[in-house]
Image (tube, rainbow, N blue to C red):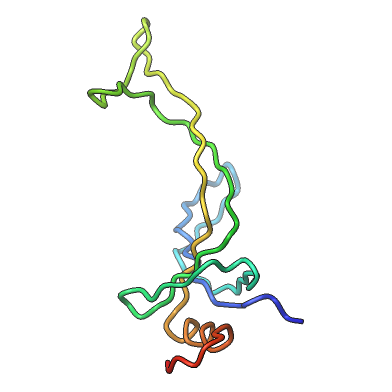
Length: 120
């Protein structure tokens, strides 16, 4: 049984500068189309976006840690230690995957997964 939905995603590569000492060659910025996939069993819901694309939410909660400046709870101003250095703290956030499908891919996804007979 096939459980992966394959879709196209654009990846933008920035321009790389020349650095003779490090051996980096100059390249222009370019966009590459790659194929990605997600497991259909992980889909929680989908929503049509303003541009007629489809946003697919997955049931794959994962944690990420980030370092952020510690702020005063009332003023929102950054906190500093006695030496005048800004105080940072490690903050944990929980994220959920959001996949944006084009209009065509969204229609294909809905036709593949719909269990009712709503006309698309």
